[in-house]
Amino acid sequence: MTTIRPIREEDRDAWLPLWRGYNDFYRNEPTDEVTQTTFRRLCDGSDGLFGLVSEDGEGRLVGLAHLVFHSSTWATGPYCYLEDLFVSREGRGSGAGMALIKGVYEEADRRSAAHVYWHTQQYNAPARSLYDTVAHATSFVVYER
Ligand SMILES: CC(C)(COP(=O)(O)OP(=O)(O)OC[C@H]1O[C@@H](n2cnc3c(N)ncnc32)[C@H](O)[C@@H]1OP(=O)(O)O)[C@@H](O)C(=O)NCCC(=O)NCCS
Image (cartoon, rainbow, N blue to C red; front, side, top):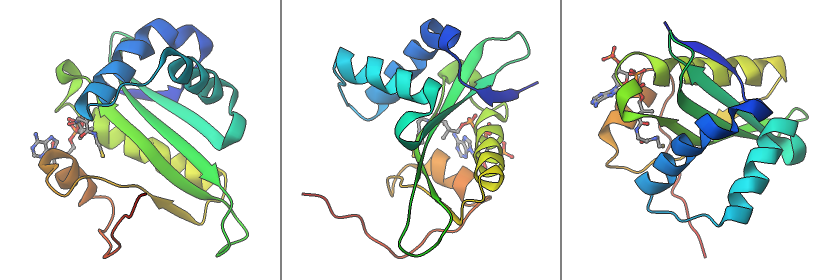
């Protein structure tokens, strides 16, 4: 059984391995300062950040979803950007990823967000297979400097 709930201060120790696993997946190496700041913002909701975690039937954290709510020039309500989504290897295949996405939609609806969007890599087949059941891919291409 999967439970989705907002992240809390006392989740820090259980959240860290998930955060590290997610960063390893993208070969990203956040500094300790970034990790500390991100966790604090997710917990206190500052700068539009909001964190969800997924608990398995025994209360262990197996997944995370990190959201950024921000203003838009195209709507009066906020937009919701799903920045990070991760389920531990042990937690995969049991519906945690899908439950997290549903939790994202519920939070976006609660805040009357006009739009929920996210990026993924073209070749991330497991993630895309999940996303294709809950959203549609657009023709936009991401540029960065
Ligand atoms: C993508 C990810 C979050 C999916 O989490 P999960 O808990 O395994 O997903 P679920 O069990 O809820 O699966 C939901 C659907 O996703 C698809 N899916 C999940 N894993 C899959 C896989 N390995 N291959 C193909 N489809 C898969 C299926 O359509 C599945 O539905 P089904 O069980 O009815 O077949 C997880 O694999 C993950 O954390 N991957 C590494 C990080 C990552 O890619 N994050 C997303 C970055 S954008």
